[in-house]
Length: 461
Image (cartoon, rainbow, N blue to C red; front, side, top):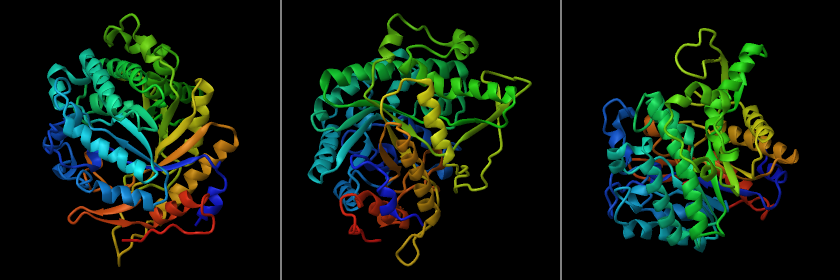
């Protein structure tokens, strides 16, 4: 096992160690205090969409156990908490009346973090679109981008004086391709034209939200969280390298290019542009608003090969086999080198601001045995990836912080509750929290710089 104190010594003293969650995955209280349904509430109720038809009605009951969970974060010794704000709690219909009770909950969350000395990194949208907005087409409609700007302004007017940082969106790739093209996430569409309309309107929503944030809380650093693909060609053949470049345009460039260059990628646009919505004058300038930081969510590499027959739509690639035999319980290849690959590649392509690793972690489904959870493979995953982050900092890449995914086991989207990513085990029947071996290790890492010889006081139950 990598010694956490030795690893911690490789990071600058101002480096931020944190933990991350998302509202729909942990809060529960789906009908409490004025909250209305999101697209994920509806998706969970559709047969065959989510494992076991699991839903977010209770989840980790975080809404009712807020103080207990904030105490847990404090005990873990981390200095920052990345959480998301549920749009259906704030503006239950997406537009129209503001729900003060929803804002009150996040007041308590932010104030509770401040009272415990925990920095607040808020995400305005982590996939829980108010269901009522589907009547206008959801993200396929330009009106949703306008509604999101108003929601962002509402949140920042209330909370902006106490937030340390804010992200507009989490993982646009999932919101667009996984949700509107592959049909795996809500709303479950499988339509390229719908996905392309959603793509531009989501990018526009990001830019409009940046305007709103800067208007209401100009002192709060604003960023965007992207699960950029670490695209690796199967071979060094010209065909596979060209396939990897197309895959980059589709999986990364469709989001990075408009945000950081003010344009859509050339070959992507040539292939798919005629099916995109109207890009109005000024849209790209709004999307291209300068950011203070960006977040990278990384779990596993994307290996691609050329599909010589080029069937269907761009990017005409096929999946290449993994190189590492090590896989997590969700089936994802463990390859720490993919993290350095994607960071180096993106900073080569774009003029990017400082970066936070906003999610990184592993799914292993160990249960509690004799009051403890021995999840050594997860601990090894964290140690290996954090070592890569330290190497990147040593190469002068501007990485400012790292957020473990996740604080606790939770609702894992289409996988329901069968997949566990937490540093803390949750018994969903009793809501008992048990800090795992990886959580104890991460706590020691996070505390090591301030208390180099003292272990954090975290119990395993």
